[in-house]
Amino acid sequence: MELAVNELYEDIGDCKGHAWCGTCHVEIVSGKLIESMTRDETMTLEKLENTDPASRLACQIMLDELIDGMVFRVLGDA
Image 1 (cartoon, rainbow, N blue to C red):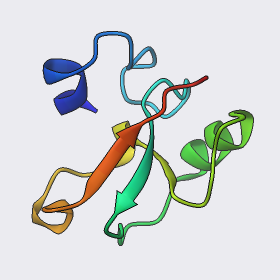
Image 2 (image 1 turned 135 degrees about the vertical axis):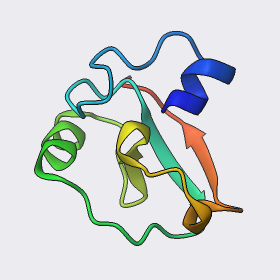
Image 3 (image 1 turned 90 degrees about the horizontal axis):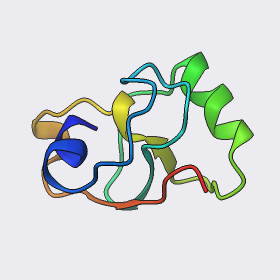
Image 4 (image 1 turned 120 degrees about the vertical axis):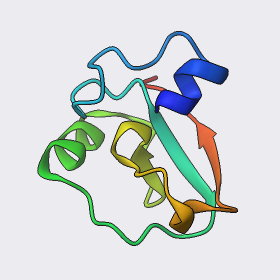
């Protein structure tokens, strides 16, 4: 999420990375995350209308070598 806020978007990150708001909602376009979702992330995604099985909150994705080459699309909380 910090990368997206700092480089691409200004209108996301309302909850400052606590997985409460959904403004950093992304879709995994290619690749797969190994880590599982937290309870807060799951609950927030359940409240959003535009989710699918590839939905995640960017604030909960660790920036490490495991996501190298993955492609995400920012959806936001709409």
